[in-house]
Amino acid sequence: MKGGGSMIFLRYESFRSYLKSYPVTTGIIALNLIYFIVVAVNGDPNNGLHAYKYGAFYTEPGADPYGMREPWRYITSMFMHAGIEHLLFNMFALLVFAPPLERLLKPLRYVPLYLASGIGGHLLAALMTIAAGEDSHLAVGASGAIYGVYGAYLYIALVRKNALDAASRKTIYLILGFGIVYSLFVPSVDLWGHAGGALTGFVLFRLLERAAMWKRRFDS
Image (cartoon, rainbow, N blue to C red; front, side, top):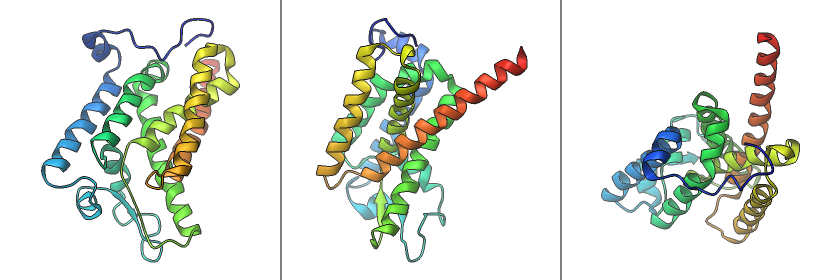
């Protein structure tokens, strides 16, 4: 990932080349598609009770404020979507924006960042549910994890400017700006899930970068 070149988010690969170059992103997209079909075949993905049955993230401030009774929901909910538009929007984002980060971090660091961002998004949403005095919080979708990818890019754009070309930096700023506005004006969008995912991705990328720097110093 170097500055001065063409925008990194333009995809030129053939289908076969994409599968070979970005196996983790391909696998994540495949899991989302497969699980959506499973959930949709058995009921309405947008129905709260049905989504809960199949692994939606759920918190209840009075009884289970952080969703720790069934912690596996932190993960399963990342591969669920409320409808076909929700699914396709998120899968397009993954298809286009995730590959450069997978190439940069490699699978052993990319997977933890992706999953941790989704978890971080749920945690912040749970905290804000408590703060707002709401009765419960139900969420599905890959958005928190995807915003973690955006958060990692935001760190690169702000701190390692030379690592990204100007067009890619502008794209990141536009995506995050649009995401904030969209999250504020569309009630069904999980604003705090997005914010928590982005913050987690930003911080975790910094930690991974520092760990890599220390490893290089140690090895040398």
